[in-house]
Length: 258
Ligand code: ATP
Image 1: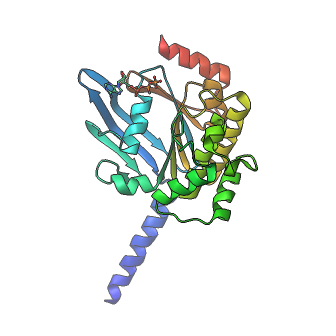
Image 2: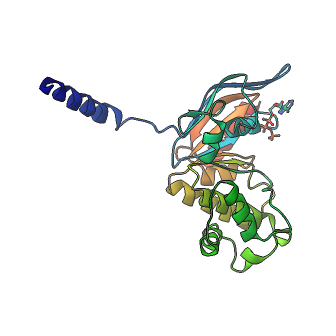
């Protein structure tokens, strides 16, 4: 019995010294992820990793496979090869569990127009199993930047920017570990787009892993930590936003589109 103790200590020490300093935390991970629609390869063996606190922006022309990637992480469609993992779990075999860690903001956040912002938040967080009191729901809406007084207005009267903010409030209330966004700032005015980016930065500071598709290279450079450029279902390059200027990025992007 006594000679087993050093072994246990040794394996723990080995884990701590070998594992911790270099270990990547794989919140969103695609491995050889593939999707076909008959003859069309929408996604071709995609490898991608988003760690907690990272904002990964996917750029690329129409039909490059960006939305397909998001939909595979959400479990909306099934892959024909490879895996999409959320917090280490395969989406295809753990669709219920992985959804608990995710929040999703599409180009148009679908809310009930006849309900107020607060009622929408209450409804959608209720679906996720939360039962927050009114004060707490108001707190989430405020943290998401919804202007004072708007919480009790019907969503039918909201601007697109306000609806996107309710989407952020839902993510906050769900305590989502990862946020998937499909062209969330398209159609927003520059101020609304800037405010939205600030919210994403705040979530990243709180260690949420963010994967966002966009056509806006400027915004991607402003808010992102990593930019991935896709073309015809393939990730053709990735860049750290710190290493390249906006002009360089634009040049690289255009080069890959030739
Ligand atoms: P966009 O910038 O226009 O949103 P995208 O990069 O998001 O484009 P995807 O929507 O992922 O591109 O589409 C990738 C490819 O898969 C395209 O060729 C598209 O036509 C095809 N595709 C996507 N969904 C389907 C579907 N349900 N049935 C058939 N083909 C599809």
